[in-house]
Length: 291
Image 1 (cartoon, helix red, strand yellow):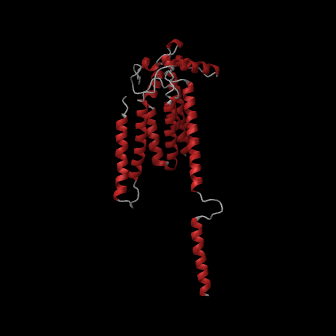
Image 2 (image 1 turned 90 degrees about the vertical axis):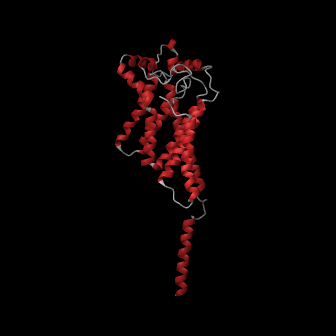
Image 3 (image 1 turned 30 degrees about the vertical axis):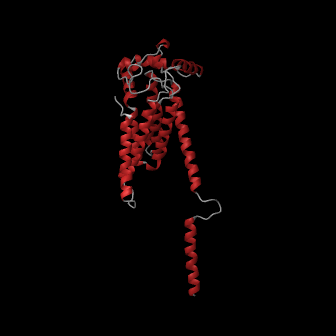
């Protein structure tokens, strides 16, 4: 599996931006078309993707202390009485079909599900789309910042009994340390779980069908997959969901602040009402003068 490069993402963002800007310059009075609106969103998402890929190339990431922090997380989880990932791995290892399913789900489900969710929201729930797009951008950005505090995944601690389930059953997206499409020492927090939570909670919040609750299975299965495969600790997923909650709170507060800035100060009449009132007064005055 090969991800698009940051250059390809940046080029896509520029092309889509030109699709939006050129018609506006040539015909400023022309109303925005569906193509323009779609291109604007694609430009924004492609730009964010390019930044995400660039951040992975920054020389700030090292492996120093990653294993020690992982062991600290393991001890903290035991202290919190969280279920151990080892028990889940032992269950999966006894059922090869389950192990293969979770491997494939970890490797290929998160990106197509996220893209399908964004398309669905943009097409059918436009009023809620920007909130969840903003939350996605913020939670991904938070994960990128935290990833510079290096944490090894369970699969890189075989002395504790963990195994790399992806290598055991196939469909590994990593390969040897330092290769692969993803950072191997950025276990905390789990972007897989963060994106799955955006999809699941976004569908429940925006959808109207009673079947929408079934989509909570996506974040549940993703959480099981990342832990069973040895790619993440339980706390990696828990922190990811907490960060999404924080992102949604930030979006809510910014919207309220912006709405407060746009609202007229208390005591000042609304402009539309003032205009209407003035028209009515003139009409009444005119009627009286005619009489």
